[in-house]
Image 1 (cartoon, rainbow, N blue to C red):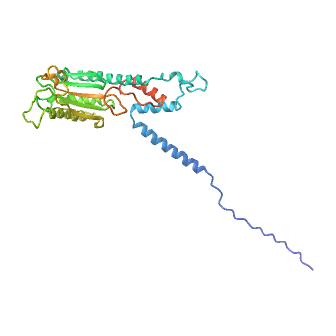
Image 2: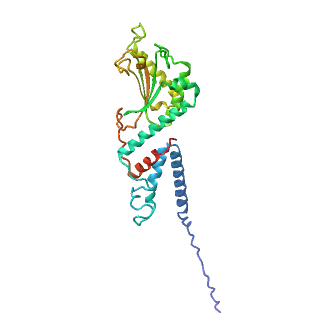
Image 3: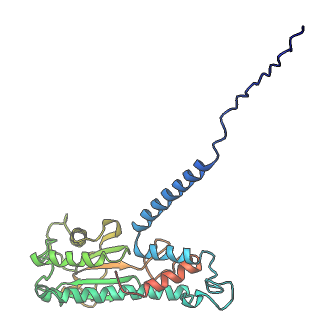
Length: 284
């Protein structure tokens, strides 16, 4: 008798490899890197001057410079273009910079006027805006208002006075030139120390006190001594008013020259518009 053959079924399980994990981690990593980049960008912007921050904001508001055409809308005449500043010329920007220096000069007068102990010195301080920039002149008289006669040693009250000027000048980033002048009278019988050394030493002492008062040293472009070669009153070479120290905050210049105001280099139009709008505001 044949036994019924038993059917044996063998099932082999196929071992599968590890499944693909997907790209979710790449998305998360990209988000992390983007957040880090944004954080460092914000930290960099916070460290910049107010003018730079305003200009950057203007660029992001209108990166293509077409805000005056469409603004925030694709429909001509609609959107935020009406709120954008009117485009200005290079001359207008230069005039706005001049206005900033004039505002600074007025503020210096006001701050000095608030200090009764500076009343006598303030009478010998002349402030004006010239073709070079904002010029502060410390004018001597026959008694020696700011410096001892024939010496580069400032009088006691003068140090605090000049430190106050340094604090106020630090409000703008423009470069500064300090010049010393004498009259035609030789103050030292020693030929080794002439009016050249005297005028240069007075200018350098003024520089030191301005920096101690808060003016950043990087803003100093030149410290010069002129002796009696550039008299305030050439008709009277021995006049005490020829003895002076001038502090000049220069107009911004893109070619390194000192002289008449030089137009700013041409940034993208939205940056220039935003900068012009900011410069017309009050000093920081």
